[in-house]
Image (tube, rainbow, N blue to C red; front, top):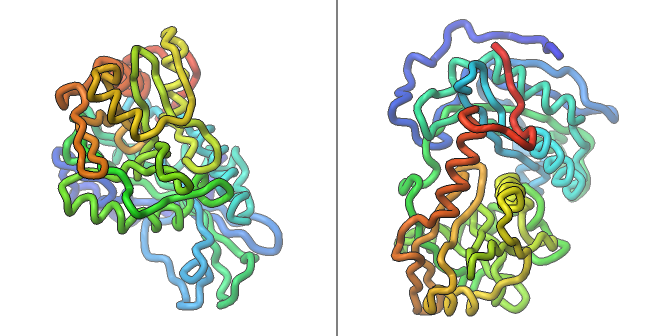
Length: 355
């Protein structure tokens, strides 16, 4: 599908230092926009990246009716650009939209918008290993109304930008601390939706953790404050006695695309998997007795993030002598290899954009 497109007069790409990219601070030349009114989505178009004009009465500012996604595009060694698992991201955005009473963006429209925007701004896809073009689709209510009700108007945008590593540690072990007095989500809440409020609840605990020298919060369940849910920006996996363990999708954690990719690959390799509840007590004792040999996070931003230290109620457990484990390394190499086209794509995860 081709969209009405208004291109920038002059690109700002020449001002970007592609050798020293951070995460989420630089944005490409163009953005996609589509609006919902009178019961349907309309006027899909591509515009120069720029300001959005709103009124102070915008309902999203007051009641948080918004959802978003995050996916990546990569230079392929075979030519063109590879977008990793955009179909699953579109499906997850449907789920989040349903939970927030937001009208779904048609899957084909989602994919075409992402693909066409990447094609137009393909020069913004960085080539250095460990970098990518981050893609952020998002939908928010645009009705100007101060009152708690479902909006009748929305806007869907897609913006992109070149990024480097998400964590300052890069692909090196990070440290986590448990959530303490804070809770993140309960079944029936927003934990499984990728919505702004889900992340807003995590900001204070994450801020407190970073002040104490930890990279992120390891969230425990909100009822018993005992079982592992996820990390602030990623799902979590454990390797115990050769078995890959990860908390199950039961309504409190985000169904991560990278999490799903890890489980697919592990099954493909014949690794035993358990999707089950795992307590922080089991984690700490298993690390201490040596039966738990690896802990790592999974997420679009960092792909695989090894965990070297977990702090809980005054006790610290060091995982694998604070070194990256073999399964984390294998998964990272395999997923990034598929993304770049350096390795086969047996599951059809890559959507190729020819230039």
